[in-house]
Length: 594
Image 1: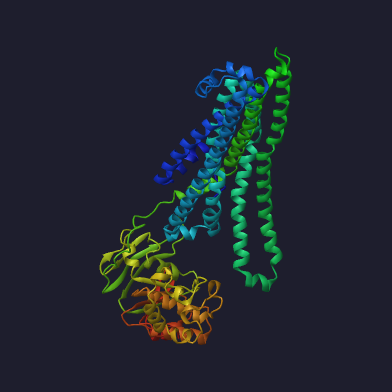
Image 2: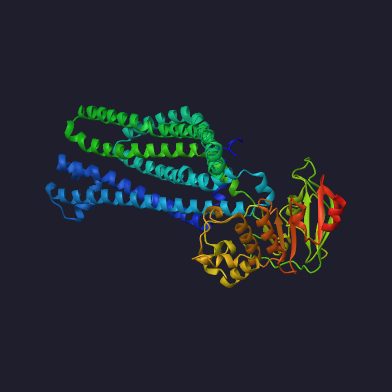
């Protein structure tokens, strides 16, 4: 994902905005209002320091300030000494209000940022789950997992929070500038201009480096997850083969550049602060010297210096905050683009709709000259397949590896669309519009049954919320799959935990739970995709007996490597070179082979 051209942030942000829910957009507008209110609190706190320091150093001159006249008249103050307590209280109140507003702004910004991040992450996951099977086959799962868990989370820290902070900082900077201009326009403009120019130079010098680090972080974070998945996913082989060093080396080759890029970004973000603090102190010292030389000396300079010092004390952190936010946005630019591309995944029309009503199926499934290829110009996996499957029949599929058996059944299940030809169910052609109605009939039992680290019952009723599981239906499905007797001998019965990926169960037990899962769905077309090929002969025989004992109203399609596995099928179809090489009963195929 991260290897393509990175779009400028000015194009990425509008794309991101389109994916933010309307409710959150309204909250962002309210947050902007809070930023403006907080900026007025900053003006108030800086403006209050001037009369406060003035009454401490030269009480009589406070009566000369126009802004102080309303308070003097309101409180009926006649002498300068009477001003000390009211101004002290006013200064303290202004400082508390400004601090409270900054705290409220931080709370609102954080809450809204993380809530929006949760919305985006859920939307990415939802859109990814709704993608066609062909998209999932062509995609690396490490990219998707990193996009959902890593890059979507990164949008919070490298885009939403920094962007809100940048906007807040800009509003605050304007407020601080207004307050400082009221004290001394020349000094205020000089300070803003000088500090702003320095940050602009730093931005210009570091921009290219940050973009490169952004691409490295987006790319290597995916590779890190890929290394972890491969090493931990194949831990049995890793332990047996002793290949831990190779997997550690692969992990380090991605992790080290990732950490280095993160370190570069952190340094570029934090470094200017220390120089700016030193420059700020030099500025205050120079101003103190210059003002002390003017008529009135230090006494007249202290109120102005105090106000400017407070303004600079607020100015420098806000400038650094704005700069840090900008560097965060630049650093996360590549990951933001990857996350937006996942957000841009189209949703099918049936997304969010109630469960589709099953397509009428009483007679047969007909494959009409069906052809399939995974990409235009690629080799044909299936070519001109013609086949009729009667309802209630048991049809077996055999053929060499790569002959197209699994692909054919993926097309039958509506997971893949044929390039040419069609599938008809009771004479009705399957299309993208009615594929969900057809899939309501289908259950799939693969070679490797995925089992969640939950109870037996939850795995049989896979995908159902725990409080909505029909317990009797689970037991009936387990009985049909011929595993109920075994489950009910265990101390916890159907509440027994299967462990991660069913590690606590044998291969035969996992397969029969897969069959029970298919039956729990009340599907009337069950597809077994090499579901017994990894089992020993005895276990395979037990699983096949469970399959053969299923209701005769069920249509069962079985892919197998061994012809003997299909002994009780009513029809066996042999595939080769993308087409059907022969069909017949088990005995006909055996006799022809002999």
